[in-house]
Amino acid sequence: MLNDAKISGQSSLDIALINSNISVLDEGIELIRLLEEGQYTKGFKPAFQSTIGAHFRHLLEHYRCFFTQMASKVFCYDLRERDQLLERDSAYALATIEELKRSLSRLSEGECGTDRYQIQDEQTSRPADTSLNRELLFLQSHTVHHYAIIAAMTRAFGKQPEQEFGVAIATRVHNEKSADEQSNVVAVKEATCAQ
Image 1 (cartoon, helix red, strand yellow):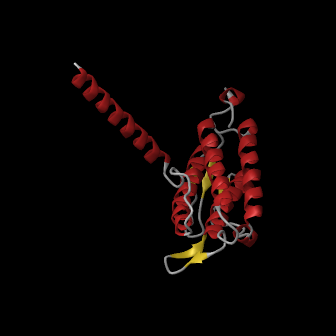
Image 2 (cartoon, helix red, strand yellow):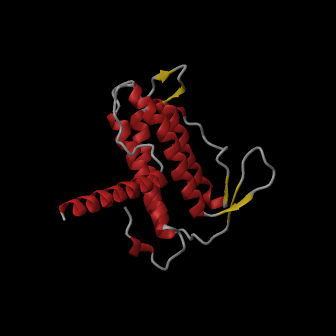
Image 3 (cartoon, rainbow, N blue to C red):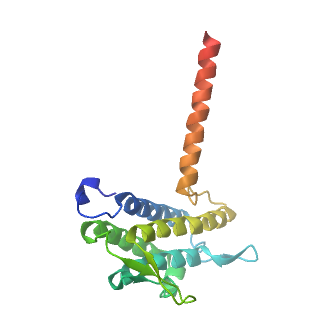
């Protein structure tokens, strides 16, 4: 994780979003390491139309687009490379994740979060304004969305991913608050009964 002091006053780039993306990529590393030989590329038709590797290729290519298109200040995630090796080779996917984590760490050191950026797709003719923070938020959310599908596929193999794998941060926060509230209710009941 990055240290907040490292970029203080340097830009409005949100260090928490960078750290969140690094954390979510770390979760992907752990999941890939959980799989046995062949499970990364095995399909589950008709329940799932793709493989775990295909989901990792898709989400990792979104990160690649972010970094390769940043200099142009226009993001278009439709213009992905579609690197089939990412889909077929889990070791290559792991190396790519490590590379992306390094890129995220360097991002905080030199990029200015106040620059203007645009996002577009291949279907619409007009780009929309965006920011690095917004795109980092998208990447984190998009990754977790695919992790939820990957988690279901992993369970179909009889493997158990971490409980929070594929769970949105907002849901994690809500669950923690609910657990804290339940603990407080139990503590009050116990204190009342003890009197």
